[in-house]
Amino acid sequence: MNLLAAADEACSGVGYTPDEEGIASFVWNEFLSNTKPVLENIPNSIAFQVPKEVACVLPKALTPDAGCTVRSLSHNLALLPGIGVVKAEWYIGDFPAARPSISRNISNAVEGLTEGHSMNLLLVPFPYSVHGLDFCVSRISEEGGPERSRPAGYFRVRQNWLRIGSRTITAAQFASFLSSLIRRAARDMGEIHGVVLPEASLTRNLAVRVAKILARRHPKLQFLACGALSSIDGEERNEAVLIRLHEKEIAHRFIQSKHHRWRINDRQLLQYQLGGVLDPTRTWWEDIALHTRQIQFGVNGHGAVIATLICEDLARPDPVLPVITAIGPNLVIALLMDGPQLESRWPARYATVLADDPGSSVLTLTSAGMVERTIPPTGDSRNVIGLWKHRESRATELVLPQKALALVVSLALNEKLQVTLDGREDRKAIEYSLAGLRNVYLDERPEWLDR
Image (cartoon, rainbow, N blue to C red; front, side, top):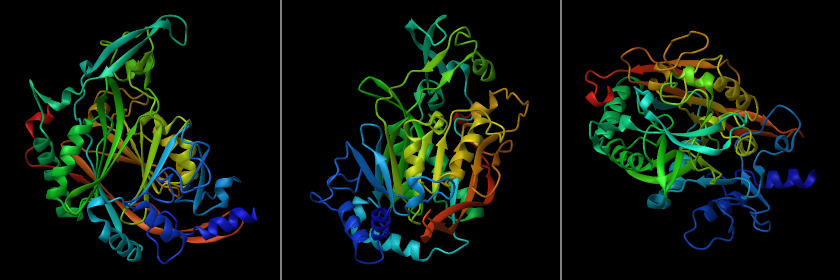
């Protein structure tokens, strides 16, 4: 116990911009090293005498204040399983085009952090229309399903919302749409720091091209997060794409595959009105590849850690959630292809779990098209596109009014006092709380939004 506490105190600040020389500064330089580093296991582990296949040690953001676990005994270090279970990656300001200045830029942002500073996120619930024919049969399993009655079926999602007749929506068209929303939102709420779109909204290539255009047009924009469907080497992937922007360029791309297939049963087929395209007598599974088990953590300009999850990954404990709870990201963004984000439904329940332990703030976002075609069990037909959960408050439903195309969420940044189980204090932790909501309208909406 003494060794654990001593190691934890010695590694104060590891994983973040260092304030002074020491272990934190050494690890920082190792992350930014252009040559072969001493810490060869980076970005999966900062331990150098333990193979990363056996166990990993990474920085952490939050110390849980509930329960009695190893996680409650450290402020700065997280013990994780080997990369054969799940491959966790931590990135400190990985800006290849601006490495000489990134340390100064992030340090200034952290030093200037006071209560009242905020981060403005533009939530765009695209697509606004989802058709039943966007779901198609991929194949029928040769073996029986879990009920051993009829063989299970597999389905895929076709992104017909990215087409205008026989033509595909271009990156320039989609970027112009997002730019219009950013400019309109900035008139009222100030600078927009991040844009978030739901699960399966774009393709990976389209997301990257759109991000390049947005980086040039909006220098203050820090990231684009979206769900993407991609075909890699003949395999279908459902991915979370988080693209960090810096000085009008793409600084880093986080590509993270979904870890759990969506299972649609007869009840959900009725709920999502898909019985006409998928046989209600079968159980249907999302036809995607699952072999890439990894999760990535990035430190933003305010010194906060952001992680993304895709739909079922929020609810299923294995293999990623133990890593989430060990590291404790300040903000978890869950990208969903789901119905309305009512406080009574499953996303709110699982967001509450993460808000309690490790204390993360959780934001969920689904598409307006899926909300529109859902028959909620409660009969509540409000257009609730998202949900916000903070550790000290009830879940807040994010409602998008008719004719609005996006929602701006303002998140206040505050310092949080943390105390380990053995009584050591740390005042450096950051937490996000909801500070404001604003609807975004456009005078003229692109015709291709309405299918």
